[in-house]
Length: 77
Image (cartoon, rainbow, N blue to C red; front, side, top):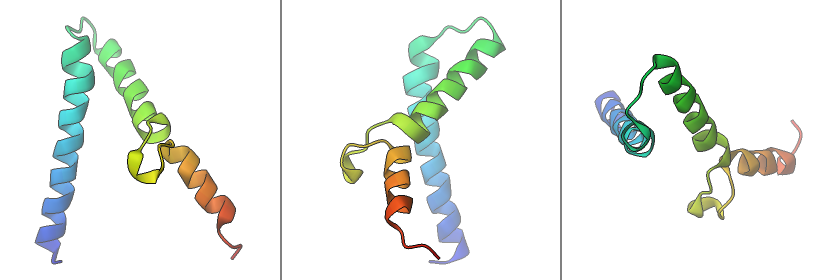
């Protein structure tokens, strides 16, 4: 994969995440009266997305739990 293809892949992933965020938070919970409310909702959603959402490909466990299990099983360097 060349650099341009990697860039396109990263851009596609970013667009997917942005669309998901807009659909789940911005459009569903709006209208927004204050920037602080949007910022707090964004932080809450990112925390959920990165640490607590259940992912089917990894056995319906949150990403943070899966990562902790991985490092607990990894041999010491």
